View 1 (tube, rainbow, N blue to C red):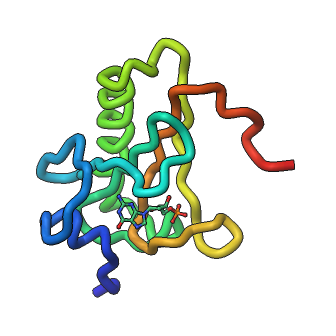
View 2: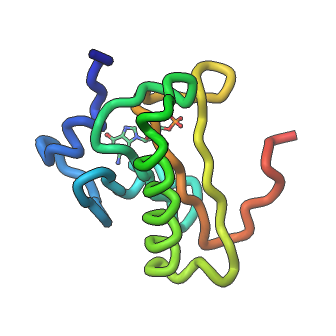
Length: 116
Ligand code: DGP
C-alpha cells in the first residue's frame, strides 16, 4: 500500500479544505497556495503516488479527472479564455505531494509553460 499524504485526510474530510467537487472517484479542492485566481487540485480518491505509478486499472479515473476539470473550469467561468492542466511527477517535475494530482490553473494569462 502506498503511503498516505495529507490529501487522503482531505478526501475523508478529516482536515478542512475548500472542496469544490467530490464524487465516488475524484475530489477537487482549492490549492492552499494559489498561483492563479483559479487554482484547484483534482485528485483520485485512492492513492496513485506519481504518474510513473499509473497503470491500465487507472484509465477510467484518469479520464474522469479531465471531465471533472472541464466541468469545474466552466463553473469557475474560465473556459472561454482558457486554462492550464498540469501534473508534476517526482523531483524534477517539482512534485511535492505524492498523491497524483492535476492542477487546474486559470483566471489570468498564465504566460509561457516553463520559467525561462
Ligand atoms: P505539487 O508541487 O504538484 O506536488 O503540488 C502540490 C500542491 O498541493 C501545492 O501547490 C500546494 C498544495 N497543497 C499542499 N498541502 C495542501 C493542503 O493541506 N491543502 C491544500 N488545499 N493544498 C495543499
